[in-house]
Length: 102
Image (cartoon, rainbow, N blue to C red; front, side):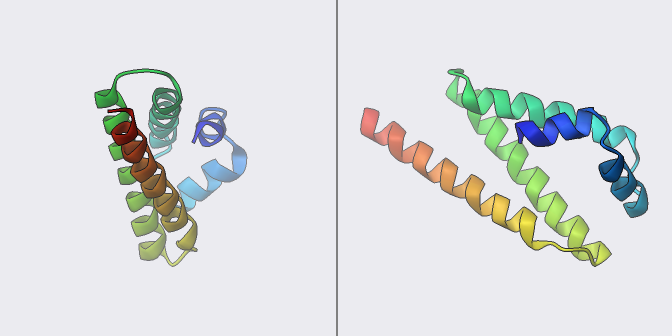
């Protein structure tokens, strides 16, 4: 997600063209880039559990929204679902690690 945020914030030409072809406003790219960057930092840094929950929820919304957009536009949709599965596995193992600490 951090690398994705860098691509979004650097306004990668291919990325901007794909957003434009989907009819998504280009200002949305910067918003997603900031959100992805902050979420990635929150998941990596030793911050509060509540912030981490919000980051996981935000990433879930991003991946579900991406899959839905790709399905609606007839573009490849498997990648967002795979990343959603990885996110779910990460969340599951995070919860397991919290149980072990107790």
